[in-house]
Length: 494
Image (cartoon, rainbow, N blue to C red):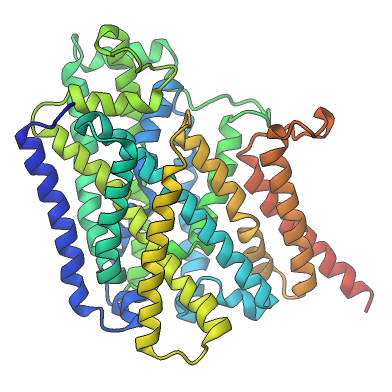
């Protein structure tokens, strides 16, 4: 059984106690449901920006991006390259739209535009996506900690879920945002520390890292061919643009943060800060993976049996943390991995609870629910989604690349949400029927692309020839195009 050195234990425990302490400190203000969901709409823009950045980064990014760069190349960085354009669109159109409406649910306006079904559909898609997100995040965090502590992965998943539930349950959105601020700083420092150690560990200096990586084309952004059955540069770029537009345009985790900022200008600045911080950090995380490849290519005997660059890429970085970092650094990096995971999990839990109250409880059961009753629903929902996410994480333990699994699940569960939103914004003629037909066909396209390869009963001629990343792209375009076509056809018949 492996144990962290005393100094690393001190660093890690200090971080964990500090985060829980911040969450409990914020609970003193959580006297009502509005405060629980929107933090009094008085958070400074820079703090909201770091919180948005924390939503981008998770143990999915912190561990899976190095794993992808180590096993393959910098192809995932193309996803980050789409962020500036998506951010500009968000600040120009999305943020003002939501700030003007002041609604805490990102999907309430869909009911006003298309009817109750649209609102419920989008909310359910979001909730399913967050359950999948929490599951993958907690699994990757446990994978990182298991070789350090000797604890089982299920035990670590339960520990992670329990810690996040505690401060989210008591502190609400204010606890989420202020813990995000601390967590963002921690994982930036932790990632930088890993790069420094890797550079210092190369026998011939940092230049050797780049020489070894370049020799094996590890800095490639992927093929520039127009093939649609591979994760080429263009496939990942359009996937990234679609996902980032969906994040900013109709993801509750982002929209709810827009409402916490203390002014419209602060909300706009927060989006730019959060998004553009992720761009260089994702490059640093990929550089860690490339550095691990160079380090263990030069020193192959340092990897034990059972840990392999080709077969278990997600396990190499955790092993490096456990066995190669100096005393104190391991505790810092493990705290960074914790921070990356907890930031996103707490957001998913709080925002899911908000939707349960706004889009289901108040909408269908108790429209006149008082503040005390609403706060009780928020706390029960927070606990419930924390438990559901933890249980789902226990089912995510047998996968090769966690990043691939997350991107596939995100594409499936998010369905045609962005297409529905864009249809409502771009066409005044499209009504409920046009939207419903568009969404139905959009979901069918997503299911066909995502599942057809894994269905042996489907003839090979009917299986999708497209890469999984294109599911959400074509699903979105299908919803929009079909909705516009049906609306025009119905108008012509009047």
